[in-house]
Structure formats: C-alpha cells, structure tokens
Image 1 (cartoon, rainbow, N blue to C red):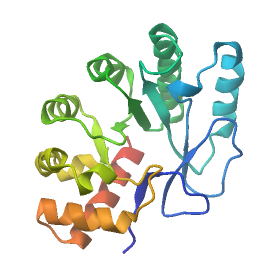
Image 2: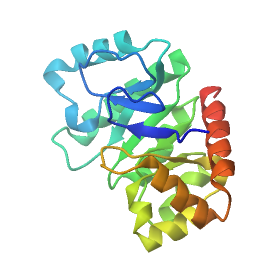
Image 3: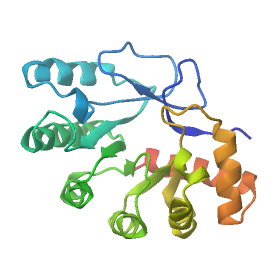
Length: 208
C-alpha cells in the first residue's frame, strides 16, 4: 500500500494532495487551492477569489491553505474576511479545508463553528494543550517533518487519536515513508495499519 502525503509541494506526485500556489494552473492530480494569508492582496482580492472559484474541479480535494497569520502584511480584519469567504466557498462546494495558522489558534474556534466540513490543521507542531483544544473542537491534525526529531511533538502525536491525524511533507525535502515509519513506532502500530487508517480518515473528511 502507498504512503499518502496529505500536503505537499511536489509537482507530478499523484499520491497525495498538491498545494496549488496562487494563480498557478490547475494540475491533473489531487490538489488543494486556497488563498494563503501571506498572499492576500486587497487590491487584487476579487481576482484572487475568482481564481480560486475557477480552479475548483473534480481533482480539487480541499480548500487551502487558508487561515490566520499575524506575521504577514494583511491585517487581522482582512485575513478574517478572506478566511470566512473561503469557508463559505468550501461549504457551498462541499470541500474540507486545509488550515494554516500561526499564533492565532484560539481564534480558529469561532471559524470552525461556521464550517460545515472538516478543517485540518496542517504542519502541526505545537504543544499538547493546543492540540487538545483543536481536537475537542473537531479539528484534524496533520503532522510533518518535526515529528522526526521533536520529542515534545512526538508525545503530542502519541496522544492524538488515530482517526484525527494525517501525515505530510509540506515543502520539506525528506521521504514521507520515513515519517510513516516513525509515527508507526510512536503509535505502536504497524505501518500498514497506519496507512489503512489514513485512507479511512481521507474518506471521512471527503464525505464531510
């Protein structure tokens, strides 16, 4: 069975979800499309929204990355507006959302209540209390390269329910297979059982 990469930036890699960059042409493989907080441009916002809507086809698995980030130029007010717009698009088109968040995790909760479809926090590498808060509000968590060396994060992953997690490479240069083997070790299950569960989780979020 294959190693599914939930969120990656590798072109021509079909066994996962490719993160489509803003205004990039739609690929012939599973992808996600969204307006990342760093890319928000108030002067081009209508064009950005139009591009997003036109990009969504049968290969589009999810809306994203989208979310909240105080480290970028767009104001919190504008980010909230764009995030909500993407949640509404996801509700209309029945798609899950891949979430990017920096230092605004508690603010995600009200947005979660507005979403009719699952939200997956990608690249999760925060402490147990943040994981507990997100999981209790029905988020999924996608873990990446930091699991290979971050002992605190390994402990958080160990406590995370199997039916709430995904694995990803994001834009890091390493093998997703390596991550699956590490997580299998941490969760004390076989790699095959982990692969099977990831595919079950994919079907769950796909069906809302």
